[in-house]
Length: 215
Image (cartoon, rainbow, N blue to C red; front, side, top):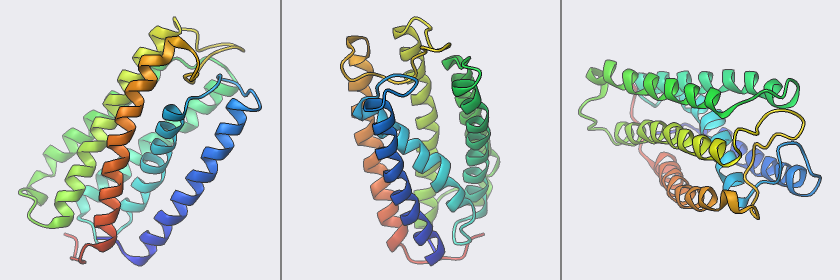
């Protein structure tokens, strides 16, 4: 399902994400960076979104061995996430006016785009007889689940901090020692295990699946 170039890019993306994890952990939990301390489950979730939404999806979008509708959905989803990143960073670190509902609205738009895209393109891949089609369908549905899950996280966090996500002392991350975030961290841990488990299975299948021409 994946060509040599995509495999190399994915391995590079995994390495880069691991390095990013070390940097974020140091900035937030050692250097006292803006946004507060970050728990291990929340750091794992952040790295998952960077790896899968920001890096893996663009790689899949340019993989010629994947059927075109799935490539288009992966690419469109990645574009939406990169646009959000470009908007969110200055709102967090420069203007300091980021609020979780902004991200929640964006997540719902992304979920809608994916679901509508699957429905419109269904004649191209349904029923998903090819192994690669089954995996890409599952991958796309997990993307939908992921953005909906992020909506839940954002809503719970926004309520836990009573809206205090703006200004010089705004909180963006769940402190592992703050009782307000205990349930959020526990829920995130459970979901991390499921998401990383699927990601491992997906990549294992993609790296060993026999090649088939995309349509």
